[in-house]
Each structure stands twice: as C-alpha cells, then as structure tokens.
Image 1: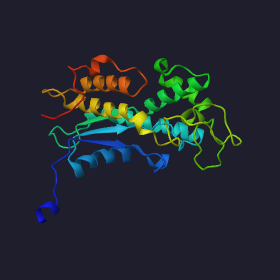
Image 2: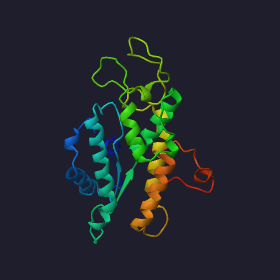
Image 3: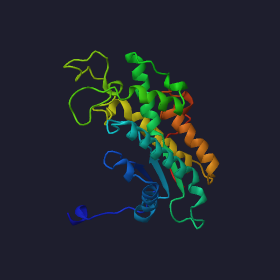
Image 4: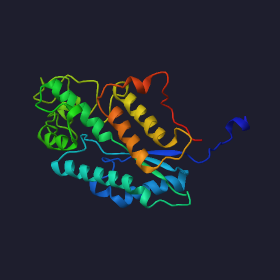
Length: 249
C-alpha cells in the first residue's frame, strides 16, 4: 500500500501549451512583459523548452469596441514575441528555445463567420477572408447579442442556429458550437484543437534533425491554416502514411 500511495514525479516537460486568459485577466493586465515572464517560467518551473501560445479569440468577455481592439493588440504582441524569440534565446540550450502560436483567434473567426453565413449575415466566406476582413466585418456584427439581461450576453452568430429570437430577443435555438459564447461544445470543436497542437509540436520534434526558425514558422503556418480554420481536412494529413503524433529524440 505504501508503494501505491508513494508520490511519483516526472522529469522536465518537453512543452507547455499556454492559453492567454482574457476574462480571468483584464486586457491591460496582459502585457508583453507578463507574456515573456510566463514563457520563461515554463522553463524555470517545468523545464519546458517549447511553448505554444494560444492567442485570444472573440468571446462574450469582449464586451466593447475598446475590448475588441485591445484583444487585437494582445494578439499582435503574442505574434511578435514568437517571431522574435530566436533573437533572444540562450545559445547554451537553456531556457525556452521555441515559441509557437496556435491561432485560436482565427479558428473562432472561421467558425463564427461560417455560422453567420448560415444565419444570413452579410459576411465573407472565412476561407478567403484576411485578418483585415475579419477585423472590419467583425466590428459590424459580432456585437449583435442576445438580450438576455446577463452580464456576459453571448453573440448571436456564435451561439444561435437561427435568427428567430424569442423572449424579447433573449433566447434562440442554440447551435452545437458554443455553450455560452465562451466555452465550446467539445464534441464539435475540440478535434481540430487537438490536431493543431499535435501538428505544432511536430514542427519542433518530428524527425531527427534540429529545425531552424524559418522551417518552424513555415510549418506553424501550415498547421494553423489546416486546423485552425474550417478548411476541409487534407487527405494527405490523415492517410496511413502520416503521423499526427509528436515526439522528441
């Protein structure tokens, strides 16, 4: 029994996936310095040499246009930190060596825009929309919210399956994408999230040779384009000759 109850530990972790939690933290609290500190702590506390930062999507925590543009600033910081990390990392191999971005914001946008088209909103097809398109169109319809009297009322194009509202605009027939404008329906949404993480880890760990930053960035973009979107899955990614697992060594 003592052996069964004995505590066990693991060695250093290979990687940390860090979700930047707007909602738990105010926008002005999510600074570049704090993001860098979180990355550094991933190595100091867990030994991780790779960090994947999930950027911040639109949710019901984004309540005003100031919030909307503040989130874009956070995501710009995340992208810049990842793109320039190699310029500051230690040559002795200590500390975090690779920082990648999971474009969670794009994933949410793709699904919201696809649902908005289904509901009849005048928006672009997400597969051909640029980030600028998402920004310009988003401020025109994302704040079309249910009038449910709540503090964090969800956006209609996020949670509704129809624009036919009841209870004075407070209720709609719900879709199976988001439960409340923040938390996704896992049976619908999480497969691409998991595939994306495996793919991003593979950018660093798959194969025998050390990857340079340019090749990691190219791989990162391919992972986000394929999985953090509504793009149909490429058969080449899921054939019997392709592995979605990631490993070190």
